[in-house]
Length: 277
Image (tube, rainbow, N blue to C red; front, top):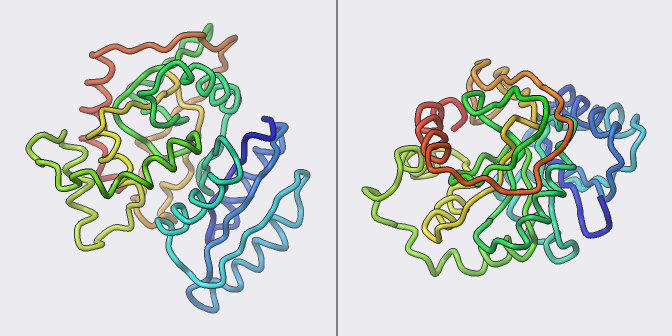
């Protein structure tokens, strides 16, 4: 990773989860790593965050810059605020949360995908997690898929794409005719109605869907999500998203776009959305 990149790692009150992510990052030559620690809600949170600062961030082998919020603003606002600020300083942003452990090839995949997306203005962002149903066990080559729906578990975006979204999403009809939306997006909108769920990605996915934007995915999961243990705000206890890691020898130099894979992702997400939102 060069100076054009930054990594934003969002955390709140899960020191054991965050520690596992930080340890995994020690295996890679990462620069410009920022931990965004949302403010505490109560005295218990204050004690937990003291543990995070002392025992997690204070005992590691990589350079971490801590941004600690005084007040709790929630994940949605925390992500929006951080990306708004860092998109002015860096050209590319990688986003992790404290339950998303990057596997080998994650950063190489992100770098290659950024390069390939230079030739395609229709790519909104890059996602590192892949559903078990589309998780390829082929060891020879990691393929890059062009898919229609966003999964926010280890992802990356060009700053200009984020800024474009922030500048223009209010100009788009976000009350898009729901009958034209796929069922997984309908469910997300329903769950976020009246702030029932703190879903930061609602406007992002809807904006990109209306504008016919796509996302790049690996054909196997390069993120291990450890948040489905009851500790997450929006997720249930389940192992349905578990994927076993298989190392690939190289990464493809082309983007694969197939209607049957796009359709399968859409159908699978529709069945699984209740687990993670």
